[in-house]
Length: 84
Image (cartoon, rainbow, N blue to C red; front, top):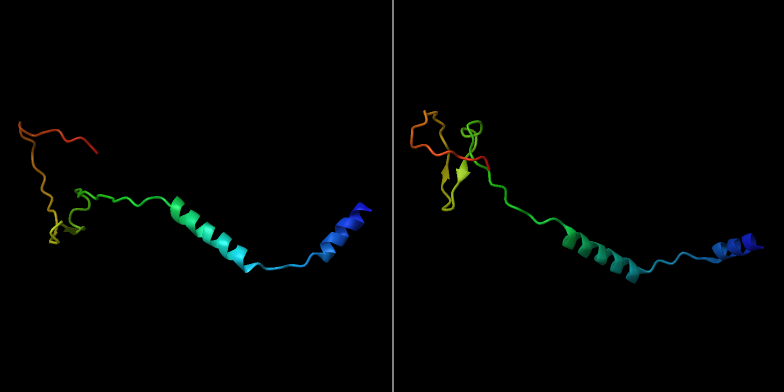
């Protein structure tokens, strides 16, 4: 008896596409993706001895420049630079 009732309910169900609910759910999904997306952050690329001759940098004023690497001996006045 129960199987007959469930089978009867399934056979009488008709697929109806509700455009309003489809668009509403789609827009809610788009808003969620926009709100939940990670924030963009700037990446600062410092010159190293390995990439100094391969990279061209642009300053705030718009001028382009390259860094030349020259190894020198440390003097008594040299300050210790910590790694960032």
